Image (tube, rainbow, N blue to C red; front, side, top):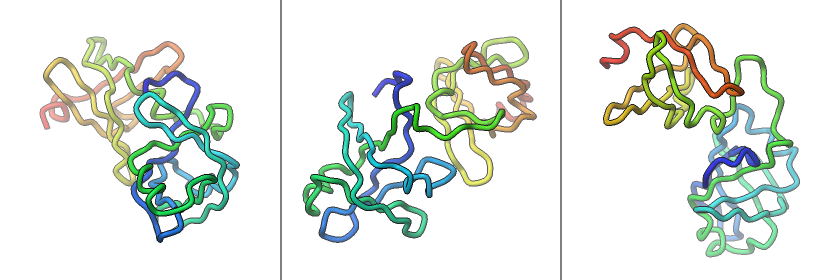
Length: 171
């Protein structure tokens, strides 16, 4: 689904848990506990978005387990595997000055020392430091999302200024 600035993706359905329709969700948020504050979520598949009320939510290992209204059994839950879990942007948590929603970064051009390097096409969450995937024509760069390399990120202006050493780009 194209980012229309209406939704923030906070998870992805990985599978089912049990036989009663409980969904296993990979949280794509720094605070998986934020699912407890939600009354409903929006499941996204291709270009369609469907609202679901949350009946129950709990944390299990590194995942979130959700019971959704109208998902009554394992078969119905399995049909939802792979969908992204979103919420309206107005329900998103407030971010600090140097924090950004992944959806807002995707597609932004990266200017390395003033020259266009490419666009952000993915953000890999690899534990301690995210990794930005920058794509330029047939070249793909994976650069740790550190302030040392990305000197200014301006979502409102639609631009990222960077100073990435050639040794990092050659990796």
